[in-house]
Image 1 (cartoon, rainbow, N blue to C red):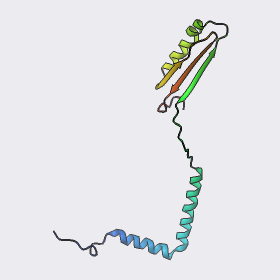
Image 2 (image 1 turned 60 degrees about the horizontal axis):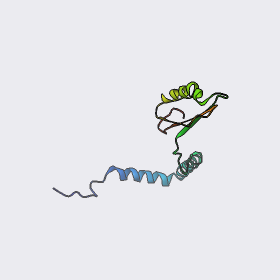
Image 3 (image 1 turned 180 degrees about the horizontal axis):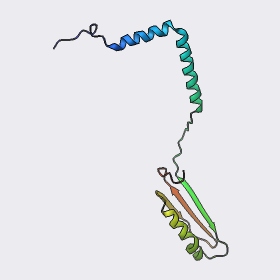
Image 4 (image 1 turned 45 degrees about the vertical axis):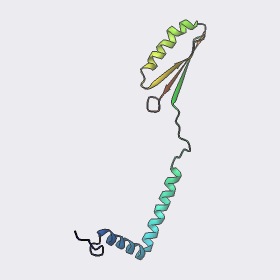
Length: 120
């Protein structure tokens, strides 16, 4: 196997690069204008970029507080808590946390994972 001489088999890329350098040197106005426009475009897009130092990794939460004045906790369970809980159970990737019912009040906390687009 013969070794190839790099000078004899010059690839196409240096010729194109030479033409580009030639163009940039001889047409300075176009080169400077293009550079300026790219710099302005970069600055404008950078100022519109939303950057968060710490990404939001919390889950989406919904707290359902129902008031049913004058009713016992058992009645609120039957008439309010259980139907609301059943409705939320059908939502994909939702964890329901239930707090004890007190007379006249029920608190449910539903948390959806970030992968779920149910509430976002």
